[in-house]
Image (cartoon, rainbow, N blue to C red; front, side, top):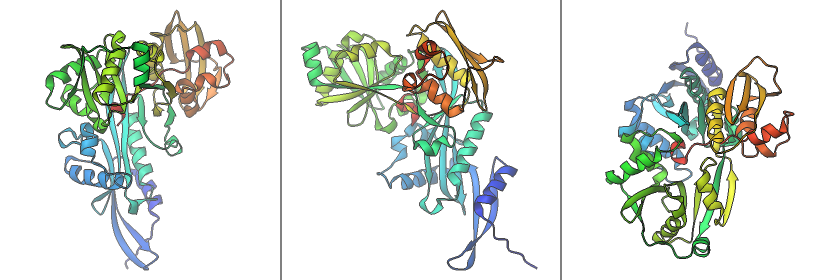
Length: 423
């Protein structure tokens, strides 16, 4: 006797996930209530292999074309160009052998004050319209996060809707400053600009310029490590343009700018006294009235210079972050803050639910973060801890610690990841 079992696919997915968290495969018998007939559908949860590349690109381009024309080989070449594709970094669902959902999760190394953090960028989260409301995105995110924990990842980040991703531990925080500078600012503050500043736009074949930019980028004290063999493609993320800055014939820095030259997301020059000349030359070269410049709190010289003449500035949250290892992330970015700020001596202990008790202390402007057995001053959830430690509004929130003077100087800690590394 043949028996047909009708199973709710969402419940079945949960059963499969409980049984095996690596690769999921089963035959599901679905009942079509509209046509009163049975349909066989094979559902697989996998990590994309090399032979999935072309279908994966076609699928993601199709899903995102609903919002705007998409070509991820061009927009994210460091991740989705054929020769850069990394197997095992895209979590996919296949129905009857065809991709219907994807979550990209890419590991990188982040050097912060010579501490190495393991980070993971989540990107290209996509579900086909006919595969919505089946729990696929939820399961793929859970698979990716499970692997991050197994790999001892310290920090993950993504773009997306706040409430959607707070279910997985991500919340908007981090700090960045957005300055708007225009021709009037340059003219009235600096007067006539130097004619010695030359800005050269590099293409992929300009090895000499990219070699200089590569060295300049890695000369700072906080940067995501970018391999030289993929550096040119990383700099082309979201079709950004790379500009070499020269004082006559001497390389003095670089700019990464949006395709339409309206926004500068990376700006590094070794002589900040030339800032007005460089911005003036930039506006003149691209025939623009104004430009937006992104700067991070630890770039104190750049902030000081821009704050004196920029037309406006806003302080914004940098993105959605999921802090997995609070000890490593706090130690690294608090050290970065202390390099540019004087923080008074003090200590505070937090109990972070589902993580443990941690002590944050500063002694002679040297920070230390560690697990502790001390009675906590404050108990918080993981999301609340991330907001309190890293949100730009942290210093404006009511004091919950009873140590107001210390925490006002301590928080926010300047967590950030540059746009070209967030994808």
